[in-house]
Image 1 (cartoon, one colour):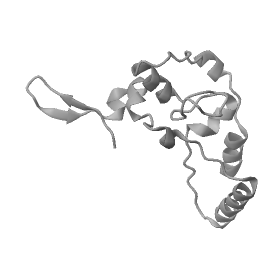
Image 2 (cartoon, helix red, strand yellow):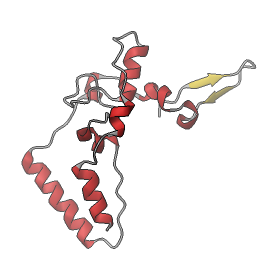
Image 3 (cartoon, one colour):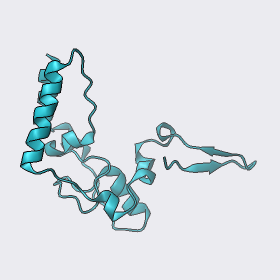
Image 4 (spheres, rainbow, N blue to C red):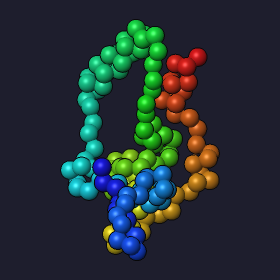
Length: 134
């Protein structure tokens, strides 16, 4: 993984952990190339098949862990972290991508409105996960 290195005044090298850096400094992890940032979309048929496989697996499972990303909140108007500048999402570029663009001399991204995010309603995906837990 790409973790920024540090060097102390004595010349000793080390690595900064993401938890030490905090979310604002995570721009180093923004995807580097346009190809890395290209969004992928399944056809309706592919998506339907994947949903059916997942539902079948969940029905058969005794236990399940649902591991998601920030992307399940984008339809509620909350940006994710890694979406590129040219994303089709109405939330725009991800938080780390915005910071990386700014740090590289690109245009300053609009500030995120945290008050608006606090007003967001749970998405279909959030509600579906809640239902699975019941």
